[in-house]
Length: 320
Image (cartoon, rainbow, N blue to C red; front, side, top):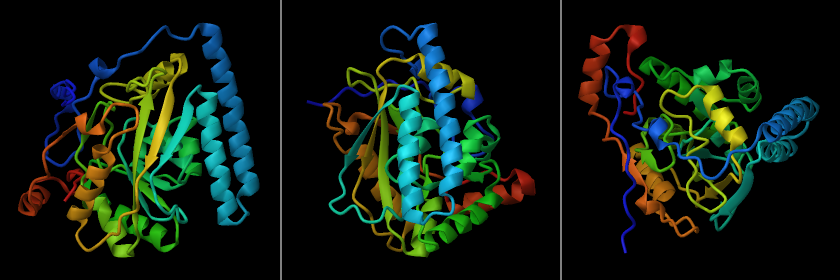
């Protein structure tokens, strides 16, 4: 029996851009569906206090383990990430489908729902993630992002992409894990975007494996939770307020089998997209029912034309 296709809102005017490469999602406030009664003011205050104390301890502990060998630092990051999620009242579950876990080194690619995705993935595979540069300027979250080694990218400037890929490749050469969200923007969790192939070039150049990951937020009854999604006109506080008031939230991090890079980044991106969005999720809700939207990027000839048409600092961030 075929599962019903979720309804996804059409792109709003604010979601449209002046070029075809800028990452855009049709998800907006209509996608957010709280489940059950919200936590009261006292409960929220306790969570805020607990998170502040945990974040402070994580920062102090991070300074202490900085001189330690890399395996110890990675173990610390995994424990710290899980502690931060627990402080927010978010349960943590790992579904590791790798026949051989290995060292957790390679290009980590995942679907993107929330700024909490990086924390959730760090609870299993600590990685330096590529994320929009604005995150680094956010209070608290920005400091944690810098300590996690987040690589900022200006999504509105295509000319910044080669330098970003070079940074990713260097990290992989340095035997580190580097992460990216190939959709290029956040979705609500009930729908997803195409995996844009550009950043997969880092794995091809470094000859390092790719680790496909699916991050899924759930309510206590097992249904998809869109409360943590950072979408539409949300600012940071909108999402934080929803998370702090939510009851029974948990996140399931699913790690798929490592993929060899090969020589074709487009084929590699398509293969990883099928893995991330195509497997049954173990909760009676097949991920193949999840709608994957957004057409393929335009051909390279159109990209060259756009480069000539736009100002040098305003060239679209792309997925060639």
